[in-house]
Length: 131
Length: 214
Image 1 (cartoon, each protein chain N blue to C red):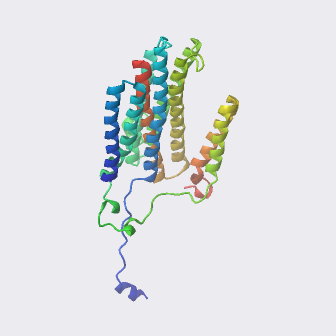
Image 2: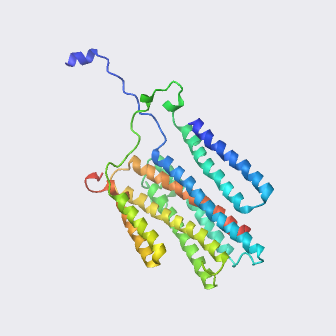
Image 3: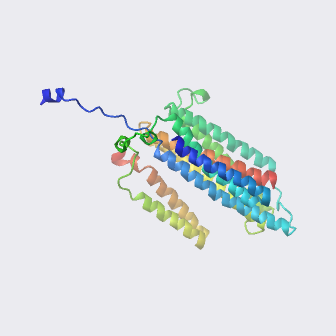
């Protein structure tokens, strides 16, 4: 994953140099702070990819002679069917509406968000999925 | 049938390709976008600051309790350390302590995350206490430009810390809801630690900007 990581770190270096030049010519803390965090934006992803890449064996993507079929296998857990994201989304919408209408609705929305998130997080820990 | 299958060379199954965990990658990408959210908040702060200073308005517009803020910050920083010790326990596959409560070296994920949760809770309560004092002194979200740029960034950060506290509870809940300590629980514990470290680093930036530099 060296290549992907280097791309992001390269972006971070670019933003960093831009930041220094920007500060030198403008002395504007607003843009300097925003650019400094853009360095963070690119560096965080780049650092993660480089760091994780060193801990993992080479992937088929890293091998110039790699074949597509070598990449088969389990990618992760994907919920086949769930209503919870809908409920979480509705609760989040209610909270956002509460910001416009009133704090009482916002607090109800937060409570709904908390309860639906519990449902979402523990969906595969209950009932037939209990393990 | 049996003899035929013995003579045929069975294809050797290839070990699955090792990839970075999708949940971890997603969390990191999301956190880097969160940095941009906080970039907007920093931009609000510096813009209002320069406009107010240009108009000759006194800055900072309130007296901040640096001692209380420093103690809060220290506790939040240390909670990142305890959280990471919890991650080390996850990497050992140790969910619960093997010794007595006071035998810290034998703590597992649960003990470290409970401690991190309590330290984070202390931080949120400390911030709330400081808010009450400032509101008592007349500084509110609407009172002045300084009130807005103090409460909006620190308030959003406080909401993030609160979200992290809820996430700690979810991770702990997952370890209790299942009889076995699964890979999924390990991943959720690790990504919550990423989030916690992120919130911590953002606070260092906010604290430096709002409390130290003005």
